[in-house]
Amino acid sequence: MNSIWSQIKRILEGSLNPGIYQVWIKPLGAVIEDGRITLVAQNEFVAAWVRERLIPEIVQAAAQVTGRAPTVQVTTKPAGGPKAPAGRELTVPASPPAVNSQDGARCTDGQVFRFCFDQFVVGPSNALAYEASLGLCRDTLPASQLFISAGPGLGKTHLTQSMGNHLTDRANRHGLKVVYVTAEEFSSRLILAIKMREVDRFKAYFRQNVDILILEDIHFFQGKLKLQDELLNTISALQARGCRVVLTSSFLPKELSGLDNQLASRLCAGFLATIEQPDFQTRRNILEHKAKKHQVLLPGEVADLLADRIRTDIRQLESCLNNLVLKARILGQSITMDLAWDVLKNYHQDRGDLDLDHIVDFICSAFDINPDHLASKSRKHNLVLARNTAFFLARKHTTLSLADIGLRFNRKHSTVVKGITAVEQHLSLQTPLGRQIERAIDSLEG
Image (cartoon, rainbow, N blue to C red; front, side, top):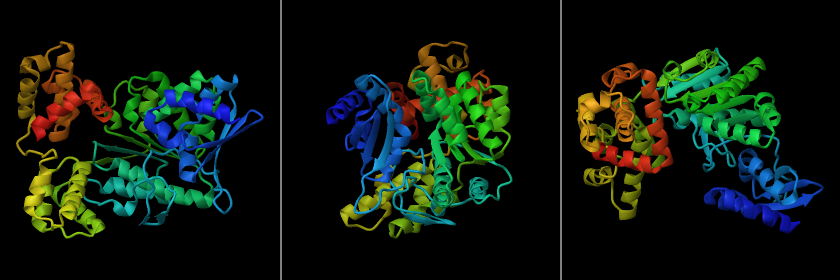
């Protein structure tokens, strides 16, 4: 039996990302009998991750070895006590467990969401989204669906994971099933279910076995009509059962293109909350909050400097502070302006003069083209890349609407959305094109 599991692991080692195999598959034990595989994980955190993300791949590999698709279950190894419960089902990102307190719930050892509500610094730019998120968790939001729109690094994932923390605390008490998944992961699981001829099982899971669905980055569904149909039916089925749905995107529903009319209407049916770029005082408050968490003294002039220089991406602002604190501790120094300036050199610094004209001039210089090329109808690869990068920078650094950005480049707002989405995906996945775009952006923002 062990040889069967060894063969299955060899197949998985060749088909999965090496990091995923080493962290999640290699440590598992296995008991194989009567067409059933029982995988044994060290703890419930690992078991939940494997259970929700890797079962289809394990079944497929096992079918290659045994000639049939077995039943696979994941449990935990007893450690001087009863086996950890496997009834609660969660789909979550691969992030470390958090231990913290929050308003109305606790983040305890073994939970897999990183953030809590009490870590979220509220300001004018995000207050509505914060209150709506907390209201959904407390059943005080007068809607069963919440749509959060925010650009990268502004806090929408912090809020969705805070909801995950709060809701899973209730799930432990009331038997609710909370699923947190990105749109890309949802799509991948559906495609794999189609290949494995297990679509009915996929539908039953998401439509009948889920009480609260948190679905990130739904702009991924643009132009994918078959996937949109399944998403629409899933949301409709959940809401018919009185379940709650949380959706997030970098764009407002009206800004998304290539959507089925019924799905577009459904996305607008619930409560809509946006997160804007934070003002100076909110950025400063975030720094002070994080400094208290690190138990360090952050001089006011240093807080002012960081808040002034990093304006459009809270994730980068927090990272800069983290590195400043770490460097000061390694050197055995207090945090000073000189040290802050030294750390800032490694981060994008926002420029107050970066309007659309400056962005166009930069793009033309970086890609060796002229402004007429950006507004032309040409679909040459280098021009599309340059144009999309201009869209991305204009969205990030100006207050122009998508329609106004499109007008400058003789494009519809839907084209601007597609271009920005493409750039975000390349940057996130660190593709060769993504690294090329990143170098271009670095030279502008550095």
